[in-house]
Image (spheres, rainbow, N blue to C red):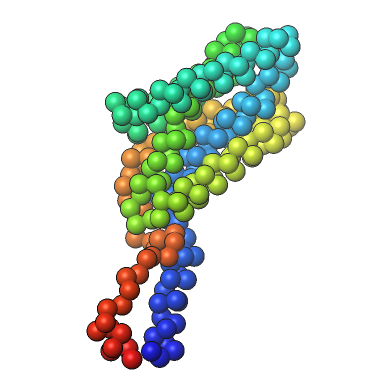
Length: 225
């Protein structure tokens, strides 16, 4: 076999391996970013919000994160059943609306128990979306599932890490209520992009990983020789 014949498959595999993700996968990654952005914000700022904005005591301030965590756990447990009955797109859209309304309620009505209910709504709304997004990325045709899940997960955990410092930066320049508005915006973005979790097409760009090639037949080997 000539040198040019040996290098051609390697070049094609290398090009496919380092191809950029499709627009659909980027959209799924952005949805994951927004979802985990809200989760990270609640984990780090819910108690602080109740103490500084709602003027709640230490015990009541801790109830805010407990409400979020409890509803998140319950929503994750019921997520598969809801997705099977209502569909992934509808669950994602409804969840984004519920979470956005919960954040808005906590901003507009900063009384302690209203904020606690709002944080619980955020947990319930966001609970089932991240697993749905990962499932949608794994089912995308023409893409290696493991690579697609890794890419979307990376985007999601980037949101988890970026949420707390971004909200802190806004709180330093404005107020913590303004920082919580970022959570409302991210939840509203999930509503806008909800349709992407039901998409089964990732466009025409190359795969995220090198395709598996069939071994050459005896005739092809003889011709190459």
